[in-house]
Picture 1 (cartoon, one colour):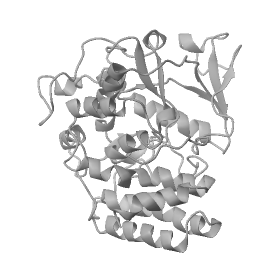
Picture 2 (cartoon, rainbow, N blue to C red):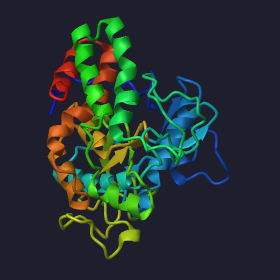
Picture 3 (cartoon, rainbow, N blue to C red):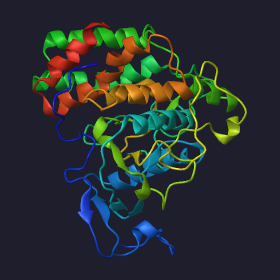
Picture 4 (cartoon, rainbow, N blue to C red):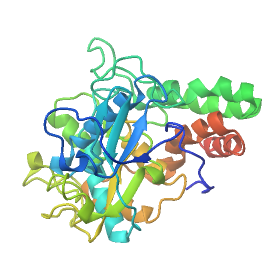
Length: 357
């Protein structure tokens, strides 16, 4: 894993994210959920860019589609013109068992899939920028069936690394030599030399849907600050019964994922591992490689990360050599920090990239 410096403000966030709010707030529809009733404690966010909160709401909704099948818990959301609200949740300390359960659930979320690498959540208007780093998005649609499908390495090089090389060089965040190292990595990615299979459940579910390329439905900004560890009782009012444990999807009942270990399921509701559960917040959701989410958790030192990975592998074994690819999958988060904050992030990005150049 890379070193774990103190993280700066989240580059995907609005300048004043997750501001506490109380009192009345505008309803969206005739029957607001209990957590959104007037007077309930909520977080309110407003657009820092036109349409930003609407896009975040689309991302949360898309990730939440996997919850009834045992996917990761996702904070619920309501939106209006230029704003969104979410229930205000109290933080708790992550435990090893909660981390393991979260890993199992995250594997189910990833397996829900996406139509293409870089595909935005359904509802994206084709214009709204995702985060202050302007991450490239593509429409939520399969690629042209008449063209060869784009591989992960092509996507990661062209959409997640290359756009930041010149700006980082111009700002001094990357030296000319550092840019050359990253260009060499991009070349190898584009040529397919660094491609690896998706985890087993992602591949299995893609085959079941008849998709020619397995693409994971990822959070997309999964540093440790974007998993909120909360008392399980706080999610009971809005989370589907099956959400959180990472139990096998109903569509796979009676079938096991090839290579998966035992102990990956639970018949209980949220919080199968005790009194604490992990909840996804503040996503930059898009179609990508599942290993990128897992690698991002290690950039700033997620506690009990080894348990998250162990739980994940119980449900969806990672492709051989995944440990050697952690640094590769961290490059996008590192180069974004170099682009936005400079400092030591440029050197850290180049150091991580050298082994793949």
